[in-house]
Length: 591
DNA sequence: GCAGAGTGTCATGCC
DNA sequence: CGGGCATGACACTCT
Image 1 (cartoon, rainbow, N blue to C red):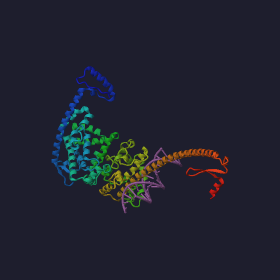
Image 2 (image 1 turned 180 degrees about the vertical axis):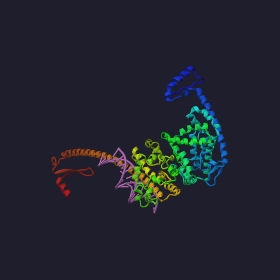
Image 3 (image 1 turned 60 degrees about the vertical axis):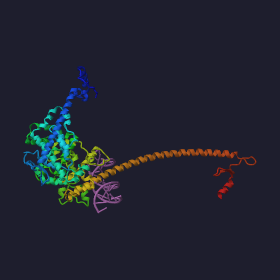
Image 4 (image 1 turned 120 degrees about the vertical axis):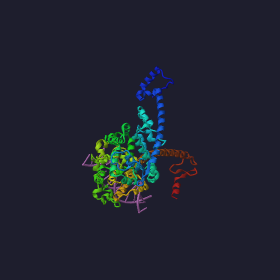
């Protein structure tokens, strides 16, 4: 990009023409005309200052609202939650949509604490999701000063909509109510943290060891979930947020502009959540950015919807009350694994019956291979969620298949192996990776069938202590325990086998290198040997000629030369040379 | 259809 | 003694 020195005074027409020409040259590079417009920049600076002032005002208002909310809260002694005193809609059962904006935000958010997505992260997500509606209001209280207000990003995204921001301090009532609900949730979160509602240890573990990906839920939360959330409510949540898993957040934020115009409380509810659902079913999810996926993953991992619970939240289970995801996925361990294992009771042999858990590997393969295989598609859709998976939309038992069985399943997948900290397999071809993931999903499907409340990654990769701690928090029956042990054993052994083969290949390669170097050394030594032999022959030749020369110079008393057949020259170690008669020499030798 | 590579799994031994 | 690792062997899938 060319640099242009801006004139200190107003540019002349000639300058403007020149700038115009330069701009036309740069327009291909994405430069805007305003880049060269001084007055525009000055306006921008003024607007920026204006926004900052508004920002401060908003923050003050938010703090005041926070105080008011705190004064309105009371402690529910049964659940340990803080609930608003005069709000009847905080009951766990949303009969209708009378004021449901509060319900899905209250209960789930109070339960998600120890989860992969902290409340602050949730609030941050909200702040990012609704930047146009209430960017400054959602940010300051929960994000703290370190998080910059999202106004800038708003400006970047939609520079032409600045006037809309100026309306924010005069938010209409219902939106204020929504914000109060969000604040409410935030306060609940903070208070729950303080009151020890969430067990401190797991939370610390999640933060310190970064096992949040492995531990999408907590035991106490599980029980609370089942205790406090009737199926109807879960179903409602499911309907609203199940599809939330992959919605396009950008679209969501755009939608809020509509909310800004019309809403009343009921309309807000009707418009907001069903809209999410509509967005999801529209299939826009398939093209979302990775960052969005991550956020949604976190969303889906939120407390209320735990990995296996989400699976169990499938409409068949909830609305119809059938407890058998098992029948859908007739589980069995890899016939070899559990059945052959004498020390663990195989699910196939479990008291629950053969039909309940027993699907063989071949069965699983058939499931995976079938075009309508919901599990494999599903897993490919949410590889990072496994087996926590996203909630399934009500009424459509195989969501991915319903959406686009071909397209969705063929989407390039992320690598759960890497995400789970697996050592990289020695042979990395894409197809093999995919196949490995498909095979990995077998255990995940088994875990789903037995409703193991942990992710397979967690089962395999957690350290022993954390693993035991995790296990102790859930009441698992014998087949579940056996399956979890087998999953862990197989996972460990799989990694070990990969490492072993990798080492073996490295050993082979090292030996080949060593062999090559040895061959080179052999060639060198052979060449050296021949050189030494030639040198030795040369020395012998020189020695014999020297010998003859010296011997020929020797004369006896009569001046006659000694006969080489009768005498020979011998030298001692001190360098003396003697003329020795051969007979005498042989005698000496014989002696 | 066969051969070979790659991978998962099991059994076993060792630490 | 239990858990993990290493490795040979086998089965399976894919090319």
